[in-house]
Image 1 (cartoon, rainbow, N blue to C red):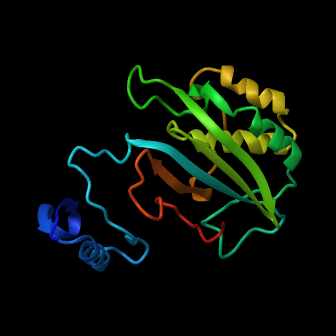
Image 2 (spheres, rainbow, N blue to C red):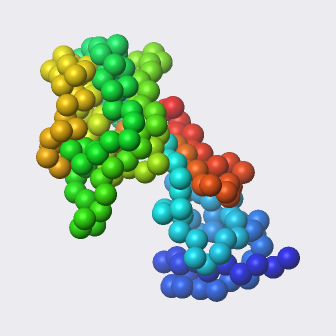
Length: 210
């Protein structure tokens, strides 16, 4: 059956109403997109659907390359930290942030005046595979730059500049005081979940370095 899709694209010159089935829409969009972007699936949703505000859970992964020699092929996909990091201390510190807390100290600025800065951090895992250190975080939502600031400060723990207890106490600081923010290049959005699943793939990403 034909379904009505409303989408905006600079390539097509503005807002268009196009009657295409889901598979045809995917092929049409991919024909216009640049090589580094691709649509995997399309689904029909109500006009009132807000993909950002209706998400119930988001998962991010931050990738650190921890070795003396800088990366070559992955230079724009990871954060290179040459000095040895204390993985056990980082794991202890990360676990201390899990829970429903006010993360204003780890945010650059509120999204809107008076907006809540309380978030439910459900997972903050630190694992290692070879020279890669993976920081996996999962929450109902995140504040601007929250994951990057949590990562930057956590690396300070790994370097021995902060104890795990001092890391957790950063939550008590004023807004935007915790950090420094890690570079954007190591951050990946891995998964977005909704109360009613929309996509068979659950919007799951698979970054090559992961």
